[in-house]
Length: 318
Image 1 (cartoon, rainbow, N blue to C red):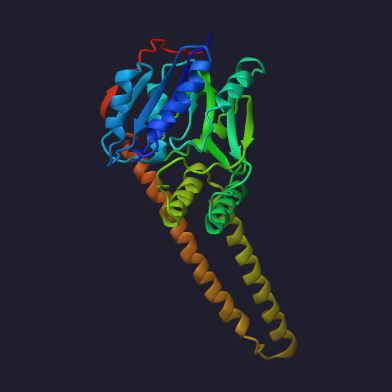
Image 2 (cartoon, rainbow, N blue to C red; image 1 turned 135 degrees about the vertical axis):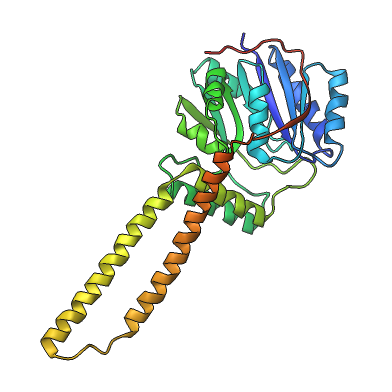
């Protein structure tokens, strides 16, 4: 029977961690298979990691990783994927907004229906503010508009994968990673489960609007080159408009012997092109910075401390 690893990224989750462990353990015990729960602490400043250590003292299914600082969601998920030992690997948040009960259905879809990975998405965002809902909706639609590999609307990081899917992800030695984009890009037989929005069981969200905007822009840049293609097409559009207007004025001069007095449009076009140039230069700067960071080849995360669960299955490397 396939063993199971569950990766729980954590950042300042002391208020909810014990409750998450209790509910998740009940589900895991009902699965009647070997499992591990791997908590990955992303440089928390509260008691998150000491709580993980305390939980491991009474339950040997618990594994723990403490990173040297906060590396963000991409780094902490990668750390978990590289440390997981199960045949099936799941990723879920620590705040219980990802219902553990779905693990049973995920396993069924993989083992009985033959899927390689099972993702999830929110059916609604009722627990969020209007501004957050609006921003999230705009982000997903913008990403899919600018991507050759669209991702499902309101997709979560909550996902279960076969070992073969994880091994494929780990082969991608990228520094500017976007895990949702990679899950879509690699293919494999995939399905998704939708569920209603659930409020956090405790603690506060770590993302404000400013952080979400920066993260969204970085994700779009790291996963796509389509923005550059759009810039290329717009450049030719501006050239076409310029030469059309020049041809019009040239014809007017030859026909009437005087220069047309309608110079408001040329001034407008000059200002518009100037604005367009600033946007293009900014876009190039972001891509250049991404290339620069990629060339440094720095690790996506650094481990300060780590301990393993008793799950001794090294995973099937198929």
